[in-house]
Amino acid sequence: MRRLLKLTALLEAATGLGLMAMPSVVVQLLLGSPLDGSAATVLGRVAGVALLALGVACWLARADTQSRAAGGLVAAMLFYNFAVAALLAFAGLGLGLHGVALWPAAVLHAVVAVWCIACLRRSPQNEMNWFDHKTRGPPSTGFDAHRSAVGFNPNEKKRDQ
Image 1: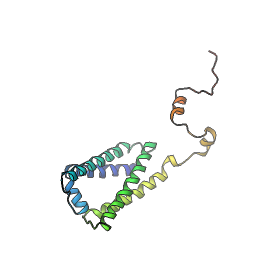
Image 2: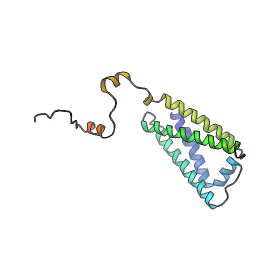
Image 3: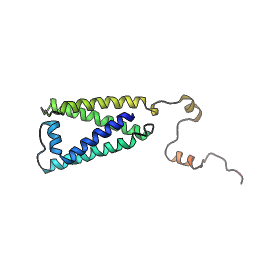
């Protein structure tokens, strides 16, 4: 998962910076058609900011691959990569767009989506320790976990002081 997060961070941050600086050039390479109008340029830059944010999130999570947050990030990346691969394939097949980077980008996003699936299947959150589950029960969440962490248990009898 660490390699996936690092690679995604670098690729998405670079693409995001490219879209922020020169959105029409990046779109020309990808779709074979430049952005027309100021609204399209602004929207391209907004997409660049979003990709840069994804890159930053992946970079910051690269050392914490065992957390639920990292697993959630990879699940979000799975959705993103699958959707982008499908959109780029539709742009090429359904809309007839043909930038030099279109099919390499579509294939790359599809491969990264499969990589995300593999990482999620191997993540520690998917592996349950049978002994812990049988002896402690399901893990507490939310308010119950907080009350337990601070030592408050309403089921426990008060001790004489």
